[in-house]
Image (cartoon, rainbow over all chains, first blue to last red; front, side, top):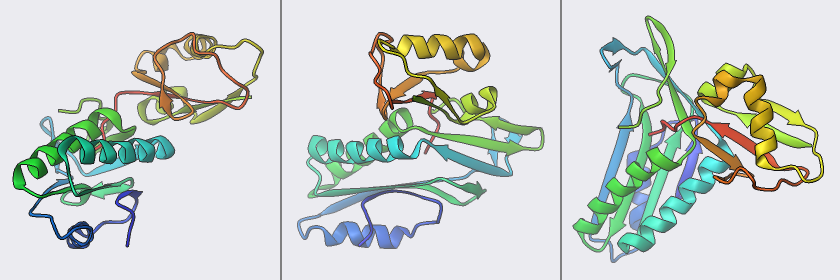
Length: 141
Length: 79
């Protein structure tokens, strides 16, 4: 079975991630997932590609910590976080987060918390390629 | 030797991703940030986070050891 926290170039399968999450416990009654994907526009400009860069060792350590914190804070049965670091086009998958809990409220809350925390804490940067040139994204709404 | 790493927009401004700085006894994080700031003021102006050995550090007086890895990072934008 794949690691529950990963940084990878390749695309991921949501079905495979959810199956792995479900396999971890038969007490799971609710799974909430977040899929982040690439848009073809940003702040009024067309975006043809988005490229990602990470401080790999720190990003992975921080994502593992984040998962552990989420499991403990929301009493999850399991959680998974996968982030791609590569160049993607519009519609491509970027990040997948899944939270599995006994009941839906904890799963929803934990999923939202994990993606919000990831954006604040994990050293990954995205650069958008537009007809006007390339620019690093520095905000994280 | 202290290994200094730059990522994303900071790396673009420094025009390198990595540099080595000679370690000296008693060296602190301030010594490294001062050196980088003098050399690349435009890069330091967008640094929001500094990590020593993959852990975020806020205290510039943090003592360094030979072989430490320091990263200068702009605001994150993953996800």
